[in-house]
Length: 507
Image 1: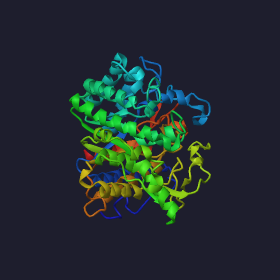
Image 2 (image 1 turned 180 degrees about the horizontal axis):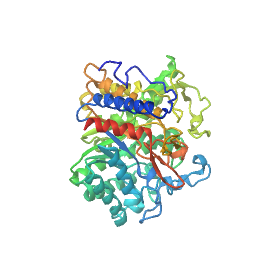
Image 3 (image 1 turned 90 degrees about the vertical axis):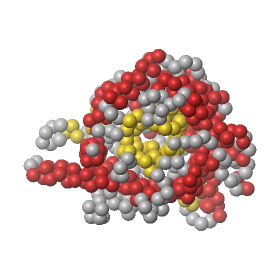
Image 4 (image 1 turned 60 degrees about the horizontal axis):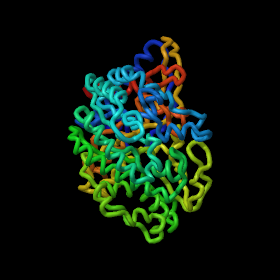
């Protein structure tokens, strides 16, 4: 495909420009024809068998926080603490997916979704984090899975997406939570193992460790800095136990893990910038990938031996548990990271000072890139860098890869179409973001590309629905479907229509 016909491009981030509403008549028809042509051209970029899916997570969309026997998670507790969440928001109702599951599966069917990635709510399925599964929780996920399969949609299910039951004291700092997680995985595998095509054990253990236990920006709000490393290690032990449990439960689907991955660069070539960038790369990226794929933690430079002692002194038996054969490896990519020495004036995503200010290094801006609505650099080419780094570091140890989460937060709003009066949400910047990021990934793994050795099997769009965006509350919208958080009415966005056209063109 020539560059002129390729709406995706491969030369870096596309700069979004305002999109004008077409005038009635011929121009409207032309706009629709153009959109259809661009979607069809994009569809030709997707290899046969490449999955273009959509995702959600339980805590972000389900609501029903006290319904059906569900108990509380650390995020319920955290979000009800004053000052934790932007605007004082909670996820008590969220997108109300718990009560609107059939409506949302119908949206997936209308979209023509190939695959849907969701998470089981641990406190909904196993209240208290121990014992038998909850009958009402089973009924909810039975209904979801049966309706997905009836619509011809392939399920991908995550066992843990941050909603640790509050009863598990100490959370992931307590090694026993890993054992409880393994028990939970077996129960869930026994119950649903014949209907799920892909299983993800953990969603972004690095984010849980760093934001939740080290920096205080996420639940449970710990500010232990490098003393939070056991929370990462115990999650990884839990992952290994969960893989063993799923295999013992004879699940029919593939099994993998998903971690946030951010390519890391020093701001300058100074010794301090380079050293701190390497340190950040260890705690964000390589301690998780190396343990899972190599069965060891990465080498630790002498100057950081004390800080990273839990990695240096990790029991060999734990590393054997962690390294389990996997069917795929998932990465969630949002942006690259630049590191500079010195504390800097750092704030959390909601604008509040955080434990980041206690560190001897800081995350520096990328002035050469536009910023997304979430304030992150819009740098699609670094998704290609991420895949290239994985290929170089892990070689044949790297199983097939999915981008298990990619998307952009925007300040989307509903407008009434001037001609028809129908509600519309124009989010062309999201279409630009998705096309440029998928293209960067495909370019990287194409024959002759820098990550050609990577078997890239798919890309999951975050998210089907607008939902609770963690510390940002409802101030960011990632969905292909707009949710009115007063009425919970759903309005498919322009990006929903674009994905629908792409998937139609593939069929």
